[in-house]
Length: 534
Image (cartoon, rainbow, N blue to C red; front, side):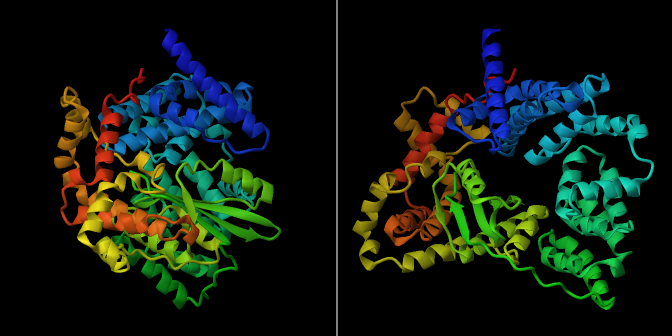
C-alpha cells in the first residue's frame, strides 16, 4: 500500500505542476523527472483518469488541475502505445484493460459524457484506436444525451463553426477528439453530412476529412464530395490537389475524379497564400527513428510555431496560433526537444518529409491533417512521397570524404574510436535495441559477463538489423551535415562507420555498435518500465 500511495502522490504532484504552468499562461514543460515517471509508471493511467474525473466542469473541480491530469493521461497512453508498436503484449493488455474500465464506469453511470470525450481525445492524440467496448459506451452515451442535443443540427454546426472561428482545421480537430470513440459508421455519416450540408465552411471541413485516420471515413467523405463538386471553393481545390498524393495509392483515383470534376465546373485554383519559414530547427534522430522539426513563421507583428514529428513515417504535425516573441521563447524552451538540434535548410526538411510521406502512404495511412496546415502556414509546399535511397546517400557522402580518411588504416582508427565521436554523447543514449524477443534473449543471458553478452548480441540479434543501424547513422550524418562549420560535426566519421556496417563489417570491431549492445542490456535487464502495472 505504501508503494501505491507514493506513486499516486507522484501523479498528483506532476498534475499540480502542470496546472500551475497553465494558470501562469505557460505550456507544460517536460523534465527528466516527468520523463522517468512516464516511463516507469504506466499503471498510473487509472489515477490520472480519476483525477481528470474529479475536476471536470460538471463536478465543479479545478479546470487547470483537470487538464494537468489529462495531460498525464495522454502522455502515459502515448508511452504505452510506443511499447505496443515494439510488440510488448503487456502494454497492449494494459491499454485494453484501461478502455474496458472506462467503458464499465460509463455503463455504471460513474463517468459522464464529458469524461468520455476527454478520454476519447487522449486516445486520439496518443494514436490508440478506441476499443469496441468504449465505442459502444460512447454510442450509448450519445443516445442517452440526445435530449440535450439541438434539434436543429445545422444550427448546432453553425455554433460549433463560430466557436472555432470558422476555421475548418480547428473544427476538424475538435471533431476528431470528441468523435474518436464514435462508431465508424457514425464518423462516416459525419464526414458525409459536412460535405452535403449547406454551409461552405462545413464543406471545407469535409475536404479535410479526406485525411482522416480511417479509410472508411475518407472514402465515405470522398463519395459525398463528388455530389457537391460545383459548390467547392478555389481553396478547397488547392487543398485537394495538395493532399492528392498524401493518401494511400489505391485512394488517389477518388481525388482525381473530384479534382477533374471541379475543374470542369470552372472552379479556379487558388494559389498558396503568402507565408514562409524564417527558421527551421531539426532534432537529431533517436534510436526509434524519431525526429522533430520546429518551424517559426512570421504572422504580422507576431510569430507562429509549427511542428512536425516523424517516426520514419509522418506521425504528427501542428501549426499554432500567432504568439508574441516572449510566448515563442517559452514554447521553445518547453518543447521537450531533449535531443540536440540544428537550424536546417528547407531542402533538408523537404527531403525528410518526402521520405516520411512515402513511408506513410506505403503503410496504407494518410498523412496527418496538420501537415496541410503547416504547408499553408509556410506559404505552400510541394511535398510528394519519395523514398530516400540511403545507399546512394551514403555513397555520395563517402565520395566527398578526403582521400586520407578513406585509407584502410584511417578507417580502422575511426571504427576503434567511434564510441568517442564528438557531438554524439546525448544522441547515442537513445541508440539501443528493444523488443520482446530481445528482452527474453537478454534475460536468458543474464548470468553471462556483460562483455560476453554484448558480443553475443552484436553477432546475433543486432547483426540481423545492421541495415537499420546503417540507415540510422546515414540519417544522422545527413542531419549533422546541416550543422554550421563551427560546430565541427562528425558526419564524415559517421559515414565511415555506416559504410562499415552496411558492407558487412564485424560489429564487434566497431566501438559505437558495442555501445549499442551495452545500452541494450542496461535497458532490458531488468526492464523497470512495466513494473508498476497494478
